[in-house]
Amino acid sequence: MIVQAQTYHERAVELKNQAIELMDNGNIEEAIKLLEEAQDLDPDYVFVPYEIAFAYYLANDYDNSIRIAKPLLKHPDTFDQVYQLIGNCYDLKGEKDKAIKYYNKGLKKNPNSGKLYLEKGIVLASQENISEALDAWENGINADPTHSSNYYYASQVLAQTNEKIWGIYYGEIFMNLEQGSERTAHISKLLYDTYKNCLFVEDNKWNLAFSEKSRTITVGRIKDFKLSFETVHLLAMEDGYKDVEPMFSIENLIKIRKQFLQEWNEAYMDMYPNLIFDYHNLLISNDMFDEYLYWLLKDGAPDEFELWLTENKKDFDDFHTWFKENPMLINNENKTNRFSYD
Image (cartoon, rainbow, N blue to C red; front, side, top):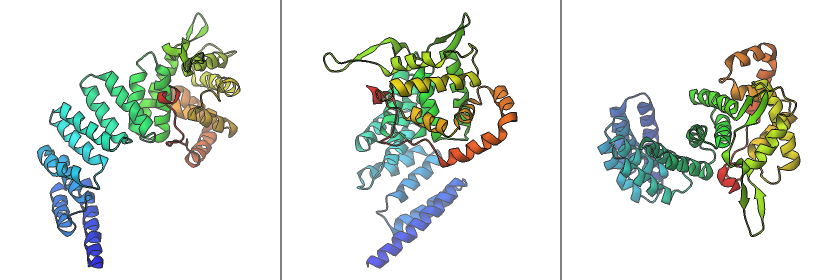
């Protein structure tokens, strides 16, 4: 009987995988037939009814998707995407409060689900609750630091605020997690424009506008005062632009970031560990930092990038090879966000 049960399960898995291929090719009806056959073979296999519900979602039949997905919430092996699917269905039905209700239910069961924080933030933003949406995305960044989409949305919101510093760094982490997409090109331009707004020239002098918080002091224990991350970032950045011609370009930004990093390493690294700056150190030690910055910002200054590339094509190709083999290390033990420094 055990062997027979395993055979039924294995066949159900095969049918499910075939159905997913059919769905990927837009053949929803045939996919549902295969999934129903799989469900007859193994009624307790939670992923089959989930895929049926998802198939109805793809067919824009949100009521049937909800009807099939809701009972799965009581299944002992239920997972975060079930809550996500139900919430998304309610969102597309125009019932946004119900959508958020199910995302919140899912987060109680799955507090580290970047997917659920993402969807909650998107719905809140559609209701013009931008501050709450940003909270959702940043909670997602902290809970699930490898989920790229939370960085994508948070960086765009923060780039429009007085705390552009975090728009820049979330955007950079996003580009390291998700490479080569249209979204990556969009964030590349955003980073360039934001850097240009934060490092601006006035009366032939550099000025900084990374963070309104940069002049504040945080209070920990009684008589334990320390400068905020934003403040020490400003101090290191002031050291970064010394002797650099006051004209914004990727070339000059590279000089500024290198001098910033030297000051950061000497004075502030122990105070505020930062995975981005650790990675910049690795890039510099491997003579890859210039190429990395051009890659990071090329969609914001395509003419400057193309001119640089004509003389540095081999170096840029070598960088891409190295980059694939030496990605930025991001995980639950190695993450950087605003929560890190509270």
